[in-house]
Image 1: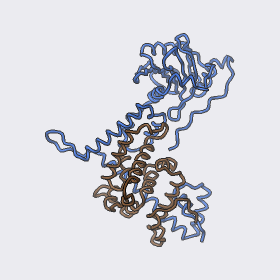
Image 2 (image 1 turned 30 degrees about the vertical axis):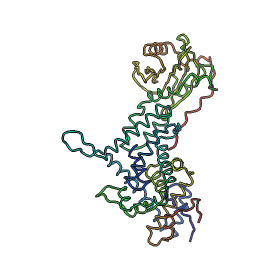
Image 3 (image 1 turned 120 degrees about the horizontal axis):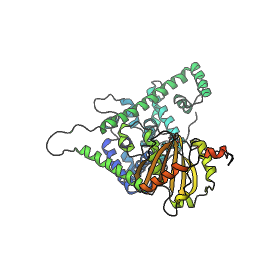
Image 4 (image 1 turned 180 degrees about the vertical axis):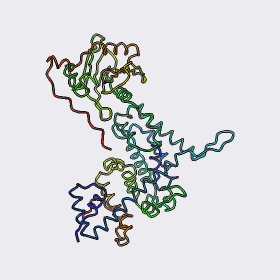
Length: 168
Length: 293
């Protein structure tokens, strides 16, 4: 389970070093507040949620929360493979430019294979929001991959946007 | 040109549409090149995103593999490994505290552990119950005298309950009468181990925690096996295609004595029904399926 928590924290923060530090602090908090665990909740879902909430708490406490979002493409891409391994840089860069909440949505659904309800539980959003995020992200990436696509769609996802279902 | 939303097309790419809806989309794709190109791009995006996260997992598994340490005098631990050991220790202690506090390792957890292919999870799954007998003894730790005294489901008729449980477990199920040993029948219910039903029959003595008899279809050793899990002891045996486990906060000799009694003179519920002493009651509801993950 520890590698999965590390992966979650790394993807959340964007770098392995800072991810490990956040995970360590979150584990200490989980250890101190284990009474918050509710019986019946899968331990992995609870642990992911605790790390996410811990990170969110640190972000809120930070003097300049918007300044925390800068991630170097090179170091982020390293999360997708070790040195010498072939990395899909385009995909890695695309994911790296997503807001953390959206990166985690991808990780939880595509990487951890959680259903939308559990992914929503981790990220404190309704399952519908998870579904909408996936559609938006996939559509935006498809725009980027399709040379005839509309580039403006791809740019939209980099910024904050309302997550209500979109009907075209 | 037909207008199809990205929501619909992504659901199509994900295979989340009904067959009829998928066919309808496919018809549109045959006739509309623009939509077909969009679906192609969405499929490409979807597969690349999925592949990227599979690669992340592979990368993490690589990290967990300990690199060969340099040979030499003394103990050499890299900062990276020290951090990992610290984190792993903290995680394990956290899980242990949860378990001790009574929050952790509920009946749903074995599913969680078994549902992953992550090889690095071995150390965690190792701490979970390995067999259904282990599993139900963990559940036993959740019971107390209060569990029974506040229960609205007190069931007075052991024969009826026995018959109902036998319908789920098998006609050879035996439900012993342990009154002569000082234990009154309190209630019976169906639990589950994975997808299979497990009967639980609870008895209460003059003092102390409940005594529980568990029964599940299956073959096991006919000879009795005693195990102790902290304060709780258990004796298991197999008879007529049913594996039994008697568990309670009792010592080995006392449990073995009760198991003797249980094995010796318990009537089979099906036999009760055959002579018409009880009419067939409605079956108990089936055990709940495992929670969807």
